[in-house]
Image (cartoon, rainbow, N blue to C red):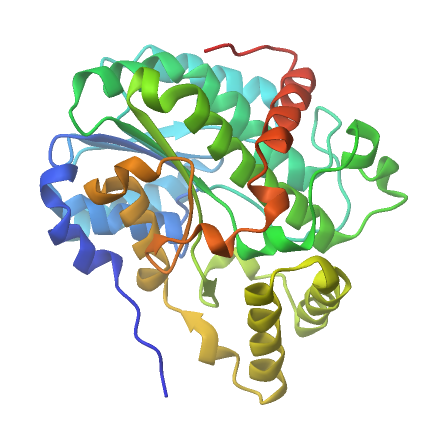
Length: 343
């Protein structure tokens, strides 16, 4: 039996009062991405501005055109940023800090999945560098704009760090050498992806602990689901998916019962030739983005992990919700970007 999932376009109407007048910044909103679908779902409900942040101006223009098709009066603004280059991240943050608008909602969605080993310009393993470090530096560098929004609105400000259930595959390496897979000598693509997705969960937890009560800023991490029509996995062939399943099996002894059952379900679905059994459309995947960004009922759950359009901390592995690991990662990240951020 096919599963039914909520859709972002439907939730837009539900959350319209909490979208109206907001400035929303979304990273990675290239066409055929969950981030772009989220922007399209938000647009008809009178946000003040949607900021589209990504590397390729042509792709940002493409998503802006999709937004105009459903909401001709919706204001958009492109922000060019390459999360693989910390200099680019700093320059983009400087641009945001010059805006007249505060940033009510930040959806940190740009990322890569299980590529061959490569370093960023700054010398970090690419998944960790792009999926985590670039966003860590960016959000902390525009925090004044986020804090001002939190102070000005009863809703507060929100930060959404897009993770994945792939976080279950790996925690954070014991030191920077381990995090960088010893210059590629110990590299495994899915462990690299899992480490970066764990980092997304831990960053959201740290931001919540540091900002929620003091600045009225809520932060969440989430798993959007298996989105087979997203552009994120365009390079992932069946063999690489099998590597993912083997990586999950390797980790299985330390997984929760719920996670082991989920892994078994994925195996069964693929073996039966029906990968769509557990899949979602872009609109269904974006639903969890919408809940994390706008649902007033989850305000007291700041720091939580979400999936299937609801808070689901039980679905997050212990290594990705450990406050000691969150603080350790924060310090490592500060060391990597060469800046400290105290709140």
